[in-house]
Amino acid sequence: MATHVGCCGKTSIFVKVSAFLFLFAFVLLLLGFGTPLWSSRDGQSEGLWERCTGSVCVSTLDDPLGDEAWFVAVQALVTVGFISGLSGVILSFIIMFDVACTYKKAIRIAAIVDAFVPAALLLAGVFVYWIRGEIFFAVFYLGFSWGITLSAAIVFIIPGILLSVDLDRIHNYHDEAAEKPNDHPEAAAAEEHN
Image 1 (spheres, rainbow, N blue to C red):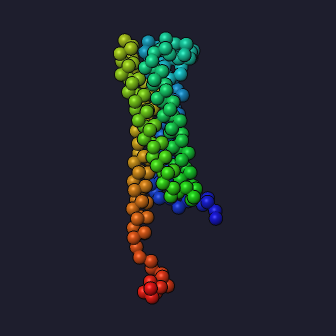
Image 2 (spheres, rainbow, N blue to C red):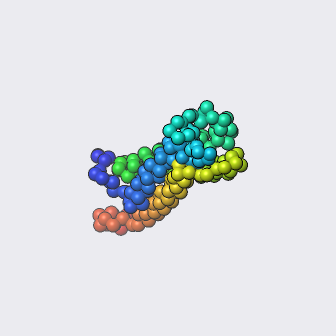
Image 3 (cartoon, rainbow, N blue to C red):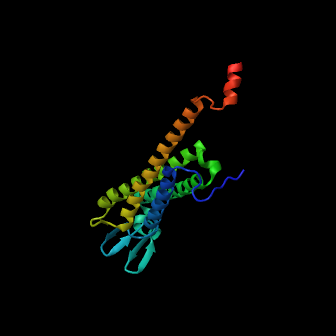
């Protein structure tokens, strides 16, 4: 029995849309994760991993900010969110392309978790960064990378909702199918005979 069918297999529109939203959210997160534009102040721009003045960048590990517990917590939250988001992308495409996995409830639940967990972690990370940055620095402006990471967190929520709806739809469909009487005439005749 072949487990792979052409593009998108036999999956619902919910799964197809959620897979591409997962990918879109992850690309946004990748941009926010790697670019040093989370905030700017005094002619410097800063990201999770680098602080840049003009074209000269130094690691945040060598920066006084690298020793701040709140900043390290933001790095950890966003990193775990990044890993969970990548896992969600992989699972959503497995569900979409692999017929053997399309109706596996455990894989679908794992994909749903990998949508809501990165969203929650990223939201926690961006808001901690915003609130603590306002307290920690005299002059503090949020930047592009911060905003794009916030956008990724919001986008991750949508495939979680779509996959939840689809899981419920499939569960209800299988329940209805199990309750329907057998439509085969031979089975009906055998039932009447007994």
